[in-house]
Image (cartoon, rainbow, N blue to C red; front, side, top):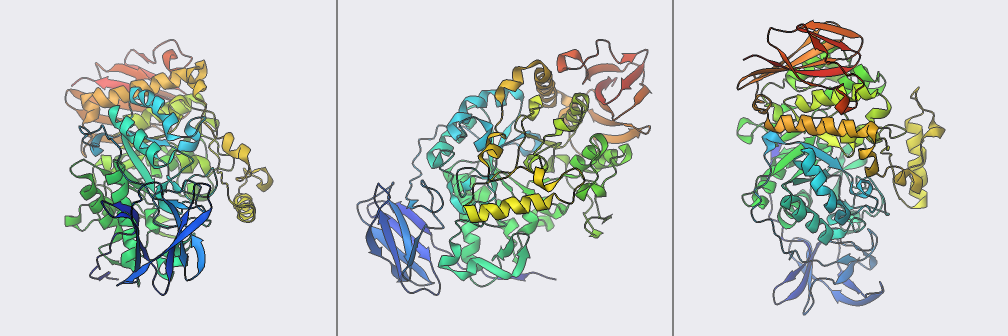
Length: 614
């Protein structure tokens, strides 16, 4: 069905801001309402004076408070109801139910020479701010920036920052899109962190959730019924209204949020959560407008917009002039699923669509994703499009991420389900492939701490979340519902805190050394930097091994991965061993080279990097 192209109506600035010489200015969209008021709050949280708002054309209301600036706290009363927080608020210092706060983006940035990211050579590192350090704040992460840089990552991807209910949350229950979580350090803390990251040569992506709002603290419907629509549905209920009556303002909610992250906070791009659930039957699609606005807000800096999207649809990253949406990257989870099936044996749920055979792993590596139009047994329909039109850097690959860990009943990481040798082999393949790798916090030393699903909802909603979580896993043979940790329990959150002390322990230090060496090779080796279509191939070696061959200036490199059993593989004359995942310096137990007499012998899960003569 052709999408309807409609003329967009210009939307004025909404929320609260400081106008030079005029004081604080508010503007609120409230169609169908007659009387709006600004309720000012004092320093002790008590309501005080009330300002009447004046109706403007287009169902907007406005008010001005002369002589005031940043720090003013307020709520909004709608036809005598409330008062409610401002859904366009830039700061919620007392949480999503508390007063909104006026902020001014007057930070003294020191990153004037920062030019942004190079999407063709990214290494992305996922961080949940609340669990990445004992303190769980932006400021506490700043001393860790040197370690990230020395590791060899280029980009830090922060899980959602929009204010969510309570003091602990993954971030996907956010309801105040414009208000960085006060628990993490609020607007000023985020600015300090991004400025410091740029000083270390690290980019920062922000995980943005535009497909749904959380269930607690969402006051949008108090102002207008048009923020949501019953014409579309998502797994989280009625969809956000991006194409119906009043949708111009709703779209601007997202697009001005994009402007804010990139412009006001100097973020280097966005990761769009569940882009397949951003439903828009109008044209241009919202997903086309988001990268356009991001690039405009960057004012010459290079920015990256990546979509999490399970459709395997190349249109997402195809240029607009070629009838695409113009995004820069797509999470491509097929390689994760194939490798987990092969090394960990996962077979339930969506893993039923994957064999984990070396033939299918090799095919996934050749293509970028596995499903290019075949029928999915899980989805009961054809899935995917041919991947060959996109260069490899558009595909974001991982062997674990926050979803794949946290969506397991016990929040166990990959290292809990595969041997250390298998973890090293999978890591070697990930980091030496031509695709953009993504790591989850602590992966570089095979951290043992879980990343559980945790929330801090009110008691009534929290009980439903706990019951739903345990019901979700009741049908899995590996789990029993009453064993699933309570998302509402404080212990569930504290158990998920990263233990940085592990990195120096013998059983973890070798893995860290492996990651540093692999990322050094990725950044410096000319053959590995040649990552275009036609510069690599992958094929099986017998029943239990495969080879990924990289070709570039000066010759070729082969990444030979053994999944299980024994492998004896004769190499071409002159081949040299460049790296072996089971070297003792990486935590392996072997003391002798696996290459002897031109034959590579691998026993059990392991990976070898072999240099061929040019």
